[in-house]
Length: 488
Image (cartoon, rainbow, N blue to C red; front, side, top):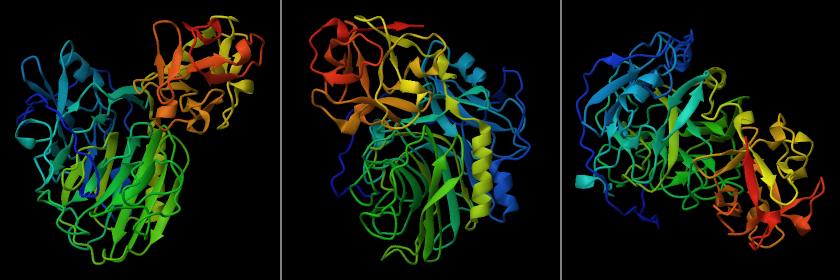
């Protein structure tokens, strides 16, 4: 994606992240997990649109795959290890990474291609926009930064902070020109921003945004610089170069924000026809957000067949996100094929690394001794939280504080300042987690909880102590109705 239209370039320095060669044997120390008999790429192949690239740090994408998923390099001695699967077709051997990376930092140096075409992803070189690492290269991902559960097993995703990126400019079998292709990615639905460009897919080979229609990728985020959809975002969109597109129009298209803890994002294209689909990677099917002709100036496409992750085609490096798995196909997949792939993804069992939300804590009022509670254990967006007698086994009172400073309940709902309000009296509610600053909270040493967006305190309205007292935002004054303790 071209950053010439106002994107800010990430500034800063980073430690040297030189590439290291592969060739280290896969290590496996964990007990075997049950392998899937069919993976997403088996489904695509049976639909006549085989994978030409298949990347995942969490699981095998073929039922018979038993090779390495990714490689890590530790900072203590710069040695590398491949991390494979626990059994053929199964889940990542995260215990191998944990053992190798104990007491030191590790970076992901290679994301292997499971398709057999060697379309692996490595540290992205400089493009039109330089990365923050020496020589203008991009940073590598911290291998420990995105823990996740999949199939009941611990795994790690690829955590893309601004300045992090992967690329392969010399690929085998990836669509070029106007050839048809399909792309999907499973991403963290709470880790994104409004900048350019958390992409995965087909890009230009020279890192320069010198023409439209030279790339075709999945984008996930809330950028409104080019195309965008309804609501505040995030959206699943396509980066086609010289623009993010949410449909046929060059700007707004009426596609909804997508707010799930884990997201399946799909973009596919063929001559003068393309589509955007997406859904909850934990349950349910896919929604078609757009299906129609190419935007003006994008037919025919001029794709060049490089593959990237976490950056724009010209190495725009201000986007953020977390990637778990994804593929590129040869040919335009049918909806039936994609629906079967989605069923396979939901069956894989992605879940937050914290596991069962009952493992969270209760937030107890320093004044009343009652707990932050979701009335009637409701899961409806917009439900205002309240004080209620503490019940140790109530999931409606169990809150998990995440690395993104969210307070999650039920595993997929977040404590939220209603309407992004920043004034006294703003209702505190639950809403689908989306990573916005109105869902970020600071846990302060004096027992207060302050909204990252507003700077206001979580407050028991009117200093109330009775069951049913509603919780709001209010200017911090240090009173006991604004102090909260954690109870396991």
